[in-house]
Image (tube, rainbow, N blue to C red; front, side, top):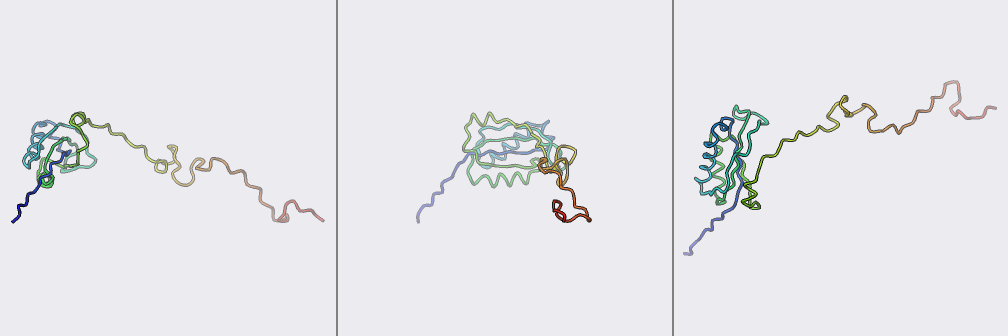
Length: 168
């Protein structure tokens, strides 16, 4: 029989863990939980830290705010599915996302900071009439820009159809 050697592929990953708002007061416990989930399945932590605390877009498990923990780690490719399964079974972690981070250096991982939330301006068609938007049909000038001249006067019923016709 031939020996089948399975080569274990180790890759570098970024894991973003979302904990409930109570993790803000127990930050070390949240970091320890994320670290434990990764190391339990053969992962080696490179960088792990609190990324940010933010208001959630929608309520998850009766939580309105969340604490994000970001972890950069090396792990076998076969370890990501069990880590993700453990996250789903955990009551402490609301969500987690794992992505490939082979392109990042250790200095870039340590320098990661949260980005400010920029509120997007609604498109012109969604603004309504009073805020400078067209709001669909009508509005103030619309898209014509005043390029249309006045309409010619209507011919009267007692006049011939051709206004400039000579009379005999």
